[in-house]
Length: 219
Image (cartoon, rainbow, N blue to C red; front, side):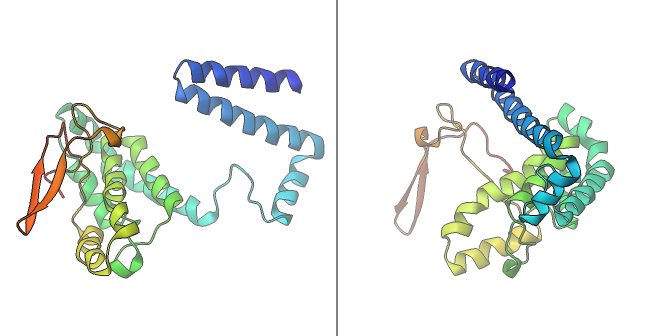
């Protein structure tokens, strides 16, 4: 109905103006759910599902079977191997070695690495599911697969064949990547970074400072 649609739009813009991304996402989720429910009410749920399948569309809120299987396997691993140490990891602000070992043993620490370099060749949705399920039990540990992809993506997109072979192969096997973005004056605003690398005398001269480096000491 028009009134419900207007109410959703009003909620969305209120959340936007308040700088509340979670509220904005809730509005979008409610809107999708409202549209699906409205369609199901008009033609029936069975007819709606049949329509989606006939036109090659998966039902909106169902993952394909292979992704659902991935979610279930990662959830089982996370609850058994990562969750028990999560509280202690946070309380002592330490690197989650237990999670790193469990993810690496299962081929999930850098599942995005192409198969030709020893990885699983997981696509973006697969990696998101891995990160999400690990984050359910330990937010800190979810940064292991996240940073491994974030740090290596420039190499995957623009690296030479030699560079990929040299760095992606060990990434898939055991050695993670680091990601050093955050500075005193720059975080997500990468354009504000002041640290520079200048090629000089056959090497590189680094100048600048970082607040922290994700995966540093373990990569």
